[in-house]
Image 1: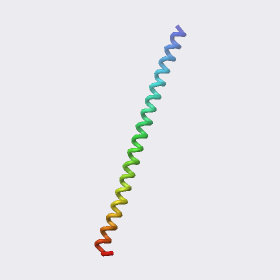
Image 2: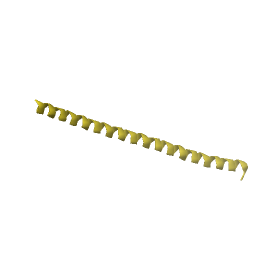
Image 3: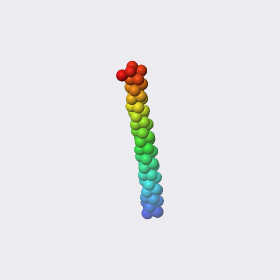
Image 4: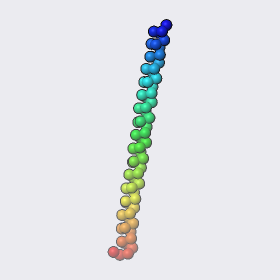
Length: 66
């Protein structure tokens, strides 16, 4: 009985470890995906700010005649 109990415990622990690894991998992938999406949005915002700044400079130069 002891051997059977030990083997059952080992199988159960192995299964839990595999599930933990799969969960950790999924969480890491989700974290990376979220981080990349945030970087992408930040990059777009900076680019749009830059374009807006150039547009304003051009518009001001047209209005002032410079």
